[in-house]
Amino acid sequence: MRKTYFISDLHLSENRPDLTALFVDFMQHQAPQAEALYILGDLFDFWVGDDEKSAVIATVIEQIKELSDQGVKCYFIHGNRDFLIGKKFAQACGLRLLGDYEVVDLYGQPTLICHGDTLCIDDVNYQAFRKKVHQKWLQRLFLCLPLKVRLKIGQNIRQQSKMDKLSKSTEIMDVNPEFVLQTFEKFGVKRMIHGHTHRQNIHLISPHFERIVLGDWGKMASILEVTEQGIRFVEE
Image 1 (tube, helix red, strand yellow):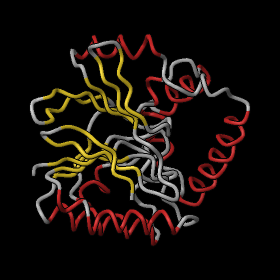
Image 2 (cartoon, one colour; image 1 turned 30 degrees about the horizontal axis):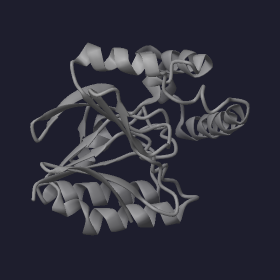
Image 3 (tube, helix red, strand yellow; image 1 turned 30 degrees about the vertical axis):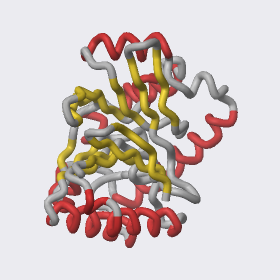
């Protein structure tokens, strides 16, 4: 049976070997069954440049490359934590980088995929931050800094992000319903798949639209399986 897998928000890091173990298990035992794997952002907890090296990064490269070499097409959409992943990392993995929004044909069903942070427009402070750090000139300037400096900045940003979340309501950090409908209309699709909010669910919006939210990875892995017969979450 033909199938495609979607995952996001693994937030892999040296501090969470359990998450890396879950990822390796998925890549070794489930992912090879698919014809394609889409990673919709935040594969890593943070990314400061393709020159960063760690045991976790080496493991991820090895696992994706092995899967790609088996003939499984692997795709990646940048998340809010790893938007600096570049061509060097992608080439090492055999991974294809996609844009912020992509429409893919899933067994006859045009489907819009994205990380999901762009849908959370009520979080005004985050959107302003996102607009700033996605400026190409600023990214190039940041990547020119010594790796140790970038790692320190990354640690500070992670800490600030954790503090900011404590003061934000759950509604602000979720998608804006009206903007979601506008996005459906803009791309002319009836199905959307995204991550970011960590709120795994399948939302039926009116009789026409379907919004599927990928969960984050913790004690279990959140995996969306799409086949010609339909969609389902597989939790391992």
